[in-house]
Length: 298
Image (cartoon, rainbow, N blue to C red):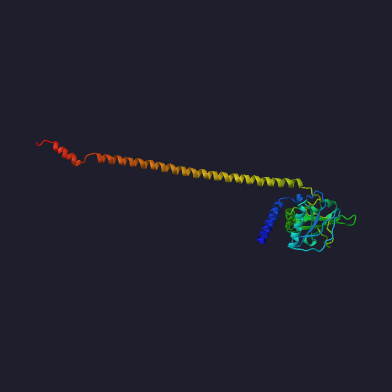
């Protein structure tokens, strides 16, 4: 009995987590990364298998943490999310997510120094031109590597990750009660995080689109609520029309039955009167005999 209850609770917990993750999917990236300027409370790695793996709690003022060997797989994923939920009972923890360098598609390209501010946009245009990937299907970040002064071209490193890999992790963290501050990745040696954030829009500012994202979320919620009201009203109106139609049919059948009963009553009354009339009048034989008696003999 106890085992069945535990299984039921586990199913409910996983169902809630899925539902919360679906709702979290409506939240744009700019809003997801709204940590309010707080220092991240936790650092969690997104493994090659997609599961979360706790690293270390980030200390105030630290920007890079060495990665320790930790458990991996579903057990680590559950432990990370349980830790987030435990902390969220007091205050939603700010979470920093990190990807292994090998999880990224790494591209290098030359960017004119004069177009330094547009390096990310140039990298995205080149991505769509030279690969089957589309900008709407990926998260990406661009790093400009130091070059000799005076060089006309800069070397840009473009890191690209398909959205589902990051979205699943972000959704699960939000569903567990956390706030995703940033998503970056380890350097190629796996020792320190790179100075990127895949949730940025490429300009280095997470505030861009935040108001539009919130407005979109509110509009979506209002639209869903209005849709529910319209559907419910339509169902009630349909049910009322059906009930009115059924009532009209029943009323018509009752009136028909009443008319039939009245006609049958009249017919029965006429039959009874005719029978009384026939029974009361003398027979033809009696009439003939009476006429014969009254006629003279001549």
